[in-house]
Length: 92
Image (cartoon, rainbow, N blue to C red; front, top):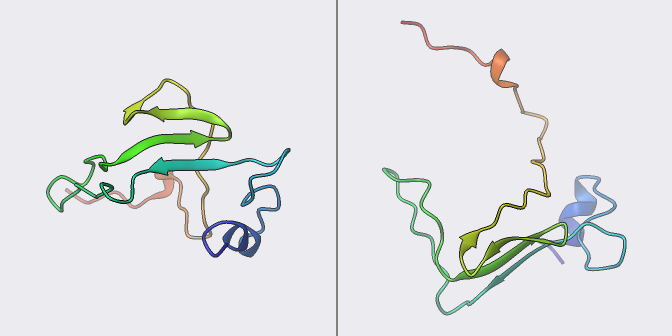
């Protein structure tokens, strides 16, 4: 509950956080004995291991550890989000 419905309620997402008809649901199916993070400081984008399936809004986006072509979700942006065109560019 702390990671699902309570977290959704806390940020005002009333249609998320529960597996119930009419609600948006993201579900990850993994093996707790083998799940692990392979990312390192030098290679931060390495995929995790032990994750079999991921469903976003009820659509499979990861199938046996491989990405599908489905893109049903969108990112949630918090109060600190700054659009890329407004980010400060490094000086030469």
